[in-house]
Amino acid sequence: MTQAIASPLVHDLIGVGFGPSNLALAIALQERGASQGNLDVLFLDKQADYRWHGNTLVTQSELQISFLKDLVTLRNPTSPYSFVNYLKAHGRLVDFINLGTFYPCRMEYNDYLRWVAGQFTAQSRYGEEVLTIEPVLHNHQVEALRVISRDTCGHQHVRTTRSVVVSAGGTPRIPEVFKALKDDDRVFHHSRYLAQMAKQPCVDNQPMSIAIIGGGQSAAEAFIDLNDSFPSVQVDMILRGSALKPADDSPFVNEVFSPEFTDLVFQQPDSERERLVNEYHNTNYSVVDIDLIERIYGIFYRQKVSGIARHAYHTLTTVEKATASERSERGIELVLRNNATGEVSVRHYDAVVLATGYERQMHRKLLAPLEEYLGDFEVDRNYKLITDERCKAGLYMQGFCQASHGLSDTLLSILPIRADEIAASLYEHGKHRGHGRSVVDLLLATAS
Image (cartoon, rainbow, N blue to C red; front, side):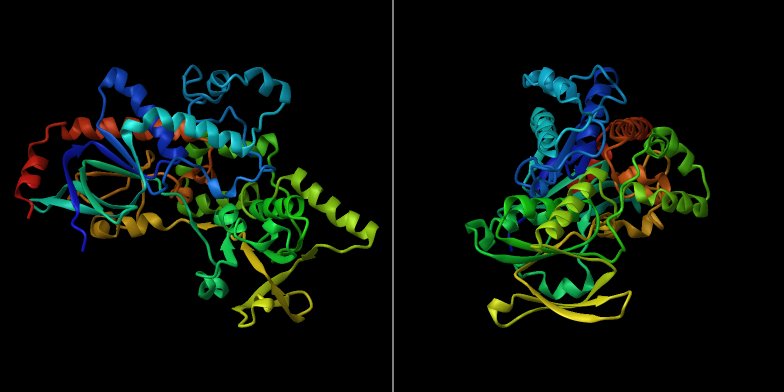
């Protein structure tokens, strides 16, 4: 077994993940540090370098919120880390204005995030996957936290911190019928789209039949990319719903993504919170941008005109069984049920793209060693986990609080405001505990 590498440093905060949420937090902490004193902060990310949904960046894919909802502008429009300043620094400000859009492509937004992250290299470590977060006990109290990670060489790293913020993002949701095929390169989640498509025969213009499972934005983007980029590919869209449904991004509805609406949701009892989340479900889940829907409809209409049915569209359909055929030419066998007629059919595909969304349970896995102090993982208004009196360490979450804070919690909409709320709470937490290291140093000195 590889020996763990233990750091003697005691951090004020370790962030799990360095996506947009923790990147916004890094900025907020830096700006507070100028007047309140800098904290010792480190962010760990399992990716080899900075990328945001890097394997899903297709050229047709555009951001679904305004560039003004970047990492800082809602909180500090004069920040040097704004998207507008990024454009100016890259000589594209006038060109972007000439586009006449509020919605940059995701490729450009990914480049913006990389540009910002590049200014925080001293506070970030890439290629390290956090495995678990353990309590550091003294007199039966959790005085600090032990963060254990593993790098790409298989070495484990052990670090100590007074607080953690878990912002690990979603985990690909794999439907039960496909779990037995998780190691088959022909069946892959949309989060791995670009890397897996690069391995497919259609890259060399060989004919392929590909199924897309799902009816949301990711499914639609995959369909458009397969249609436009791979002329040798025939695509079946398979979705449980009766149609591709448009996302509601109208002005009044968009107010559910405002900081004020977060306050409103948090103040409600649990039953009303749930009702509010369900009421606006069609703003984000299993919905598609209307322009993308119109493009896809146009493709299928032109098929009718030409009489050449390259692609197919199966609604009200569920996959009952998925198996890898022993004969390679038969590919992946899917048993499909039409829920309207009850008809069952068997189809074969060379590849299957699972545009089936994400689960958000990673926080429970990472914090499992601390469960006895956490109750039911409830958080306060500032995203700090509510612990019992024995836990003196700070535990924060970003992206796992939709049930208490509303739909904006998993989106980009309020990143600057949330980051500032967490930053303020961190400084308050540090003030109450003091910044002395005597207790933790004692723990380190007496550890094993």
